[in-house]
Length: 255
Picture 1 (cartoon, helix red, strand yellow):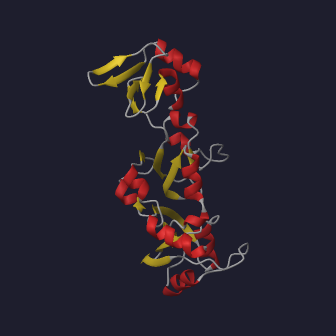
Picture 2 (cartoon, rainbow, N blue to C red):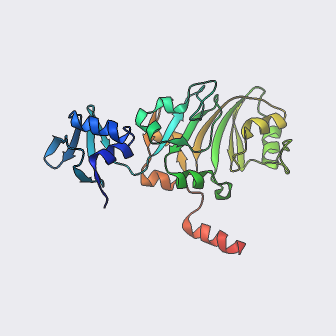
Picture 3 (cartoon, one colour):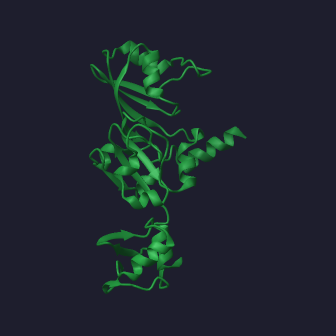
């Protein structure tokens, strides 16, 4: 277990600089929760075990988290950037503490693409989820300008050539959902891939949403657009492309 002074705890959780956190504590704005209820602590040097620690700042209760892993149901017209240029950034949809913690998107969705967006302050997690070697399937639902045809689906499954790619890119799976809607599963995560594949196949993407990553679905999270939630261990496990045995087998095959 880790024991930290209260000012360090607040700083690590995104409440500001050490100086500001000490002022919060001295002003009686921090309550530590224990077995006998809450107790205001005004000594920044007071130390607490961080495992399972709950505390209140400005009447809002938080639980200590070494890292945060969240999923946001991204609305349209928000940029997946800490320094947005033309639209508000997705961080404006989240508590200010996440900005101080340097939370960042895991990959990106275009400003007009909606749906599941992972975010974290854990660099190792971000790198692992972004690595093309992991082959994590991502499921998209695209609304098309022109009707969806069996020929279009077959072309996307066979592969289409994009001008800056050395080889054709194919969907892992693709199926028609409606006259102007299809579901496409991809693993590569190339720039604007769904939109560019549809254009290369002779259609046009009018709207796009990401509905699943790995085995984690947006529907199971029951989030309205703009809402977010923490991911628990079971949900994080669903983001893995293969079980451990399959991954070991795949690694052995490459040796």
